[in-house]
Image (tube, rainbow, N blue to C red; front, side, top):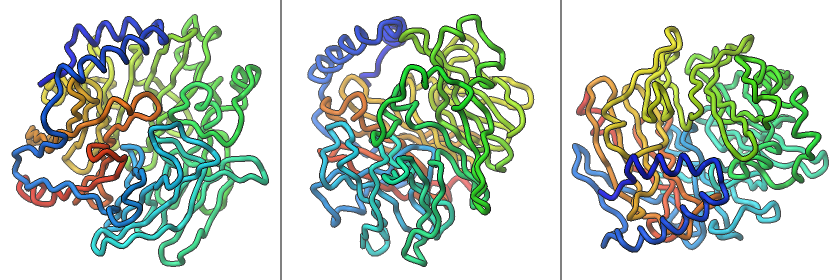
Length: 433
């Protein structure tokens, strides 16, 4: 297995201090390895207790166009078998997103293979889309741009009503049922990490970027529509502050609400020049605290109301860890970390964690599931990604469970087009019961 070694990852970490040089060296290194380690297949289904069958439900809808689900922390497939997908009908996803090239919002019934365009939006990116996700089996949310007010908003669409039934003045980042949702500044993200920002509005000015009192995390009550500022960036930076904070540019990202809705985690990222530092933080909607502060936090998910799983640095080592909110203890998950696959995107349903890997030297990505109680780990598939997808246009698998846990949906380009795929894991879950 042509994975990147620990030595190679250390070199990459050192080069992070000079992002421009790192990008150039990384691109050349990837291209050379892609040729040297090339495999004679684009898809390999692994032997496991289930017969993995990777399906593309949208094959009959714009089969020649790019389509994708979005991020790993949200459900695009509900318990009725309705799949949410962004379809880029007018722009190749090898190119950067464009505000004048909106994506279609398409609902597909995986039981009948029938697809229908129900909306479109220009507020999207290739990694997280428009934060398109199910709120209930009938309602789903997505972000949009309102040209009249020149602002990003949240729209709520009802399958039963076949229409947008609600609209809010702030864009969604994470939601909790039909109780509330959280927002952040997609304009700040466009400045600092365009992979996750939207392009309908211009970049923030230098003055706006250093205004930490009017930017941060907002909470909107779903029933009243009232929005309040929960935490300003100034408040975030005031918790366990570091001497360099006054010289840094700050942002928050990856807000994920706890299963009981009583709190949420997020990543506080700050840059000294072009050098990036991360902290994982938690809010109970009243106060903030730091969970992990060893300069590196990547992708996390809730296991239960007291436990988080994430790929991050703890005890001086990168790996998958379980974090206990009550004790603050970080425990290495040896089974997931010992695979030496590096960073990935973990998503949890009951006792199961589905996660992926970034492309290895042969440009193969892996899709895996792990039962953290029985310690059973299964590799489901190996999937190819061309070197033409890189940077903002990369295609992470971003695996995510359906809302009932029977399916896994994920994005991929092994068929030469960005698509959203599904695989049924019911038999695997049944075997472990």
